[in-house]
Figure 1 (cartoon, rainbow, N blue to C red):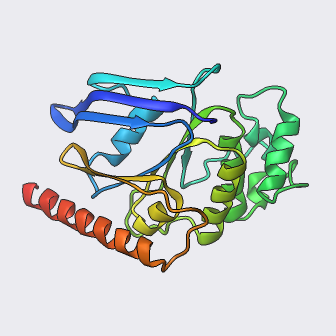
Figure 2: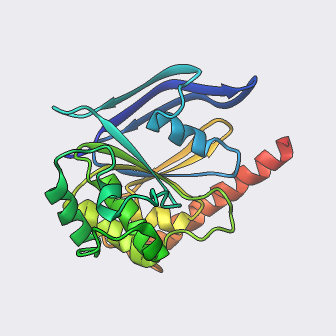
Figure 3: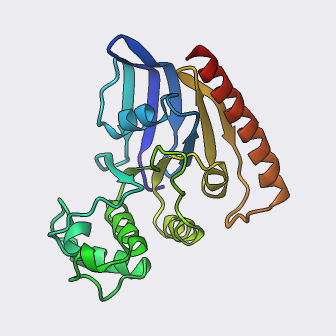
Length: 242
């Protein structure tokens, strides 16, 4: 299986004396798609940054492992964050040498064949997102960490992008960690959904329903209600402490 496995043992993170995460134990298998939900301020993005290596834990240990290859991490934001002075192909190959054919195949898979020499300013928002997705997926054994914007009002990726990501991961499996406020998005895409609360993982929900999954499916609707109930409870608890 492509992708990196992730292991967190007794991981904690504090900022200016405030504990955000405390004693987190988590195992993510290679090729697994894990979504993280939770109220604002619960530590979702902090957990993601730790997995991505952008921050170091205050305590505990994090290990990323890939068989026969160094575990590589690529952080993909809801914003495309493309370099405006580099063309599409240059953005996909950022930091990579000798992979033009691979980049071409991935750009074809995301529907951007023939746009390699265009610059981001000439692309639509959805097309820029596809370039960012291609840039993440060109890495062979990577732990691809994605995050939606923190604002609750920001829409999640559309159904078309969700379907595209799902199709690409079938063809090129990767380990994915997604931070999202959209519970339905998490259920449509993920193998597991983690609810972060009180500095730890309050719920770890695994399900093996085959893909593609469909909105309105009774089994998913029941899981959605369960997760929404847990999320609302976590938000109330966090508000009471604040």
